[in-house]
Image 1 (cartoon, rainbow, N blue to C red):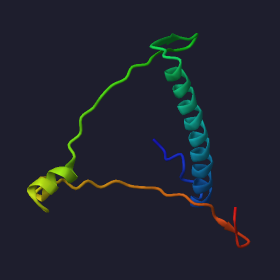
Image 2: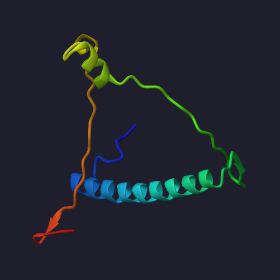
Image 3: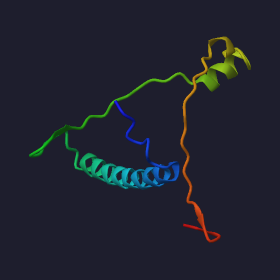
Image 4: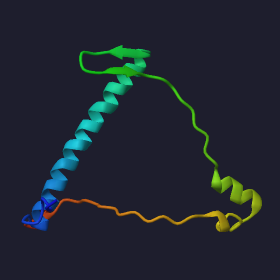
Length: 101
């Protein structure tokens, strides 16, 4: 399969990334607001024309590694730690004529 970006400059990709990220962030805010409203209404199941939502509270348990290390001593967990790598894309406005765009 051909790379769909092979003729697109990195600058254009950066701008499209920023535009799409802004759209996603705005939609995420709207989703969070709708979720909060459904929770406030104490809805457990809502059937729309396109989707059905079920709303439930759930609990998860996580190990407090700082507390465990404080109890057993600094570095006591080092042998059990696993390093993972990930790629991060950070975004900031490009300066235009000395001012943020």
